[in-house]
Length: 613
Image (cartoon, rainbow, N blue to C red; front, side, top):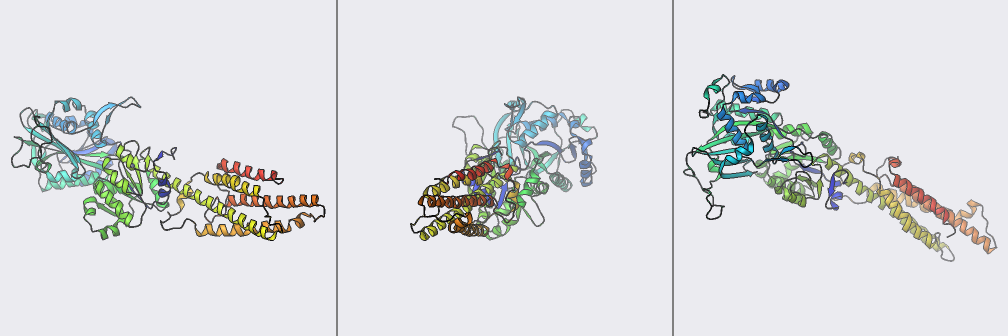
């Protein structure tokens, strides 16, 4: 499993994963490549831009049909500098550079200079760098930050307050577009008729958001989300004094004597915002994800996507992956958590996409699925995914981007952060379970036959001597059974294992087919061995002699026949045990298992030399 990029921390999770019935997976980094870049956006309300506009005429054309105002137009992203005023460029660059925790560093593997941090933040920093704006570090170091609002999965936003040289305090905030745009009352104005050039270094022009602008913003978000773009809104707000009037202050988190100013509640700051723009960030699907999801469905495993993106983006990605199907349910996290337990249980088996979900929503979904008697696998990469990873029957953490706490809470680590590796875990888990069943089927058949033969022949013998000697019985138990178990355990996992549904928790270890095989093989072997034991002398043409030496030799010959017949019956049985289904081709895949072939050869060669024992 290590070769398949699966680091197993809890050995029992392999067996559990074999019978998983549902997988709750992240989107970013698991289903997608986690290499995000700004490919489109809207500055203010009407100034739309596209990366490589000439190559995306279809997308731009589709957008033109949905534009509610003829002033909307699309320009190439590389021409933004010629469209924006210096003040707008400065505002945009500061909102991206200052309100961020990402940074630039050298990749130890490639030696290239890359941005490190949240993929959304690095995408915005790369966007600013590609346009040749002021270096992010210079801008960030020059900013006089007086309050930091860290990202929260509850508010879906992050921000910071900066004191400008003129004494004004400015809040930069970015986050989920459909949430922040509801808090905006104004928007920056971007002219396309040359008025920007006349503006020079004058103040940033803004305008109120009316019904038409609100409808335009909603259409823009819907349009980008339908193209699987993550939409991030950039906003700001200016305060003439700090702290503002009529706000609730936080308890001072800083030591007494520090000169940090008062800290204000987020809800009091994030009102009456001015919209700078909306960016559309693309994260393409990983190669092989569609096939992996199809294999999960083929194996009877449902896939539920839990993401912090909005419903439209999540729906579009789910459709591309094949997760969303007709009759499936898409729901937002806040709505899901507000449902009653009974309704949750009714919805959970059909829930395919949980959008705008928090880690607590994910844990709640896992608990509900477990109450529905599902065996649940969960993927997670952050510290706050720990509860869901621990709650699930099998937790998968990300080996590349995962936090240490997530790895400690997980059972299996995906070394490549790829959803396809989960399918391989299912496959290898089923291979492990099948290996146990194959050996049990073989071992029990051998033991039933050996006990029955020994008991019957000992009763029938005047000297109470069984058909098999003690050494021969020891050889069968210690040598043959051990090697046969190893041989049956070395069959590699194959995609054929995904062609059946997972076993339920209440299913017995021994299936009906296994019991039929055990009883049938045992009855057949007992009958054959007893025939050879009692009629062996006639079959071989060996007549009873009064000479004790000759008779002893004849008995050894018959015993050798019985022992070899018993051994070869077990070798044949080991071939039959390679299949647990009802298909007849027991040799399928055997030529790829050199261990099985070698052990079978050894097992069939040694008994021929044991007749004198």
